[in-house]
Image (cartoon, rainbow, N blue to C red; front, side, top):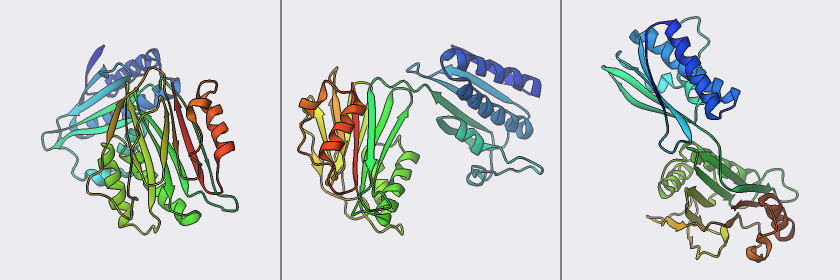
Length: 320
């Protein structure tokens, strides 16, 4: 499926937006998600009409058929201060609501600037269905008596068939540990498509020069199609069924890091289960004996209730 629009007027903009919105709902998006995509396109095209006298819009499916991709191209003089234009509420017009690039970016899953120079401006907008093929659950609880949890979990599904999972363990417990782990989590969520080693290197460098004083140990897992890749750093750990020889590497984000981190990739079995854990979970449990009769939520609760130690404790279960 592919649609092509040449747009110079508000009427043509409205027609394009309605076509995209209708197709998005037929494709499987909710009315809310379809409306968000429509808002993004409307904003992008309106900007192009105002500053470049029109736009060319292309609508097509992603390569994996899990999402909708829209490109908006104009032939104006580009955006002179892109960093400023991306800020929330920025507008170059008086009496504006402040909508623009920030609205566009927040309305889609991925926002890419393909061209920005004196011959024109091109952006690509991507929105994907969230259709994971596995069961997922997470638990994260602070140490008894503390007001803050030094651990945190992250789960990011993207591009329709990819997922990133992480358990982050701030050194010690309490407020400072929580600051560091939340800081790292935000960096990961802003850069989740990077290679795992590059992503953790970026986290290490930013945490190292930040004002946050606690190091962070982490397990990071990415699933794409039938492959899984991971990095286990420090005292975090992973257990699996079937049993894979999962390797842990030394280091802590913000404190010490090897010059190169090894990213290990494994082929997934038809049925699998992984538990990603912080060191607040006792690693004495046997995942195989617990695995088959429980959903991910039930299994996470079972492990948590029986193997939680007197510390911040976090676990993610991924099961198919």
